[in-house]
Length: 421
Image 1 (cartoon, one colour):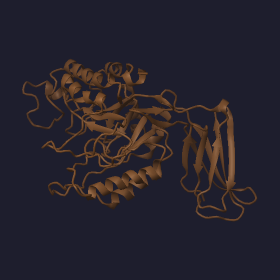
Image 2 (cartoon, rainbow, N blue to C red; image 1 turned 180 degrees about the horizontal axis):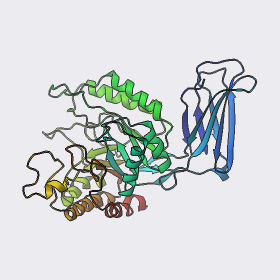
Image 3 (cartoon, one colour; image 1 turned 45 degrees about the vertical axis):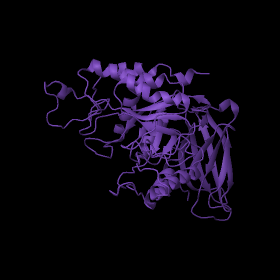
Image 4 (cartoon, rainbow, N blue to C red; image 1 turned 90 degrees about the vertical axis):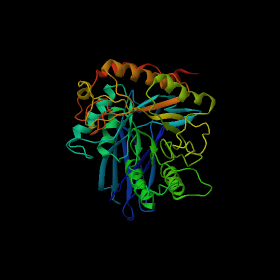
């Protein structure tokens, strides 16, 4: 039978590279792939399946039928995969789809199909009041993507969780950019200066996620770790080893996408494809000063509370502020004179006194990053409230907290990095 295929677009040659592993090699067997679109069959190819555990074939799309996948046009080709016996009979068959898109790095830019696309991402933790870490229905997955798009975001960091694969299917068809992540909490030891020790299970389980999700065109980057923190040492620590193992494993499993070794804090891999920081400064003027160093290749880098570095030096990679905002807005608490007396509500910074003040702060923070010609994107915290965290664009029940048309207008203006020469 057929096993899970790997579909890799190659826009440079206008081809799809298919790895079609099979459970065994029987004499005379072949694998065949048929690519189609709304006009019918585009191209077909077949190879012998009796020689290799993982037969490989290439589907080259004729130039007049070549159409890329992008947020503006999330075009998907139909794909039929077959395992045939020596007489041409179908032994096993599956239907799927494929999106033709590329991801490249040029200076401080991340390019989609050779063009800069500013990544207006939102942090999505994927929690639900009635499903916790599992979406109650398929429609809930669709709704969360549509809520992000409605507020002006064009993608998400799927934060601290390997999301349901159905989410990625909907992101593919809706043109929603995704950074795939791993849930990496729980490796703290309580030992000062050597406080995080992830083990081999992190690498093993991350490789399982990479194998499952490789073929989704919506995924434009991988981020195996988040906010790991440990001072730099004059020796190689367990965190150093596992961080590098996860980075190298990702590059080996999928050389087609950029990889950020660890989001926010402890960048331990010198050649990480992307560099970032997390900054929850609430004053737009102070936030602008914090972010200003990127122009001189001295970007803001997260450090320990004592100012000692957690990360290896920045080397001119594409850079984005991958967590910012998190503005606390709880209308219920704001309606009382004393605010939140119970401590059941939480967000970053001082809570705005009105929706208008929220919009003003949101606009100021977003403008800082949109106006930076060296910033390829951002990620705003967060899509929805989650329990006591009241810093979502929507409520935990997905209800509107703001006029999202206003938030969308703030975000959808051209970014400096998209228009710079």
